[in-house]
Amino acid sequence: MTNKSDVRVPPFEVRLARPAESGQICEVCTEGFTASSVGILPPETILRQAGTYYSPARVRGEVESAGATRAWQGYVVAVNPDGRVLGAAGGGVREGQVGQVYVLYLRTDLRGCGIGTALLDFVTEQQRRAGAREQWVSVTEGNDLGIPFYLARGFVERDRVPFVDGTWSLRMVRPL
Image (cartoon, rainbow, N blue to C red; front, top):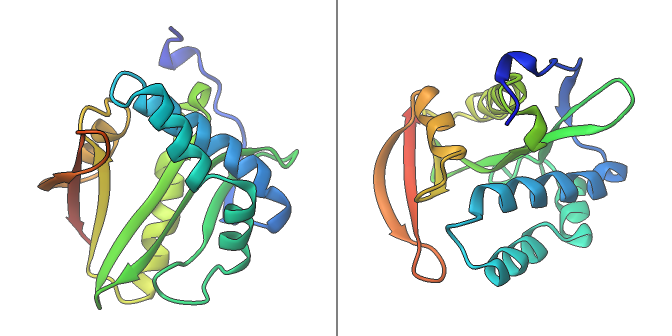
C-alpha cells in the first residue's frame, strides 16, 4: 500500500469534459467503480453495472448533452497537462433545489491528492448556480472508499435503499 505522503500530486485542471475524452472517462469510472465495489458486489454484477453505465457510446452522449437540462449538467474531468483524465464526476439538479452527484471517480493510484475534492467542488458550484440548496449522493453500503470521502465533506446518511443483488445504497445529503 502506498503511503499518502509518498504520492506526488500531479498538476491538473478541472473543467467540463470533451467528447474525445469519453474513452478515458469510461476507464476512470470503471476502475473506480470496480475498486469501490470489490467485496460488496459479485464480480459479474460489477462487470454488468460498469458496462451499462460506462460504455463509450453512453458516456459520449452524456458528454455531448452536458447542460441540455438542469438534471444533467455534464461530465466534469480533472486532466493533467498532457490531457490524461485523472478523475471524472457529474451531477445535476432535480426536484427544484436538490442537487444530485451521480458519479465521482478518480484513478485509484491518485486517491488523497485532492482530485476528488476538486471534482466535487466543481459539481457543487454548478449546482449552486442552478439554484440547488442541498446536495445528495448515493453510495453503496460498505464502500470504504466513498463513504469516508463524503462524510469528511459534510454529508450525513439520511436513508438506506435497495441497490442490486441484495445490497443497499446509502443516501447521503449536505446543505449547500
